[in-house]
Amino acid sequence: MHKWDNTFWMMFILLEAAVILGNIWYFTPIGVIIGFALIAVALARFGDHLFHKKNSTILDENTNSIERVKGWLNNQHQLTQGIKDLHEYRFHRMEKKKIALDEKMEKNYRELAGKIIDVENRLNLVSRALISQKSVAPEPMQVVEKPVETVRDFFDDVWEKITHLAERDGYVETLSRGVKNSILEIGNNGIKLRSELTKKERFIAKDEFRHFWNKLQGKGKLDLAKDIEDPKMLRLGSVIISFLARLPNVEHDVKPRMLYLKNQDTHNLGTLKRLRKKL
Image (cartoon, rainbow, N blue to C red; front, side, top):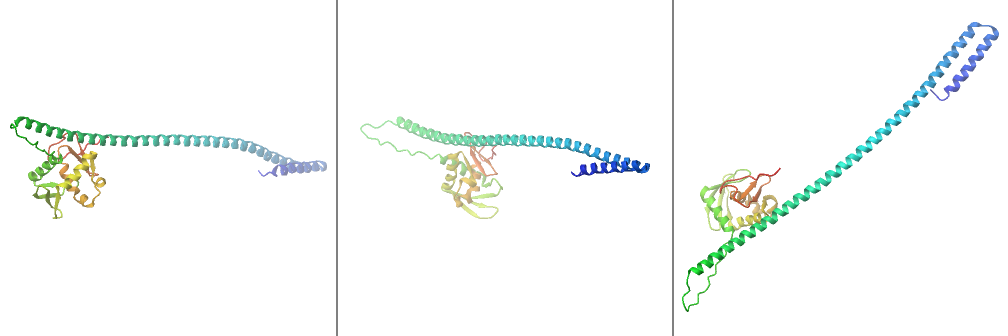
């Protein structure tokens, strides 16, 4: 109802009262009846206005209460979401630190294991040299020069296994695509192969095998895509890691192409074993 409706209806009632009084004065019953009827209608309409106004006030109060509750719930939701995001961020940081620490410990362990193996090899050579010197009695009055014994490179054992596999099997298949490479020639300084897919021949030198082995032994693992920067080495990498993966103490993965050096033999020479990752 408009704000001027109250004044209108009050004036309407007064006007009808004047009409009624005028009709009573002139003794016209019909005019009196019509006037009272109009006054009743005006009073009923005015009562509806008061009732509607009261209901509107209650409705506005309820609406305001609902809006306040809605605002409180939104604030609680935002606060809960913020706490959840903070916990997820802290958990992610802790997980990254744990992974970095595990990798560092694994790397240090591999380096230490490699050094221990190298020291043991050197000690064995020195022990054999001492035993051989004791078994030979020196001639009297004769100066015997001490023989100089060269320390055997540990990679030589790896190279013997690689050349043995090449000679025994006559071919090697790549890890990811299974492309067969036939062995054409085995020399002291390298291996010559031919790809059955491209029919191209290539020679892989012993020092190139040694480069990959040093990378693997130094870190304990080798990522072909990240750890080999030389483009020429990278082109030969798929064949080289296929040989290294068939060593008894080396496991592999395909996506990405990775090698993992183990402390002990986990499979037979010439076979493959895929690394079982921890969940």
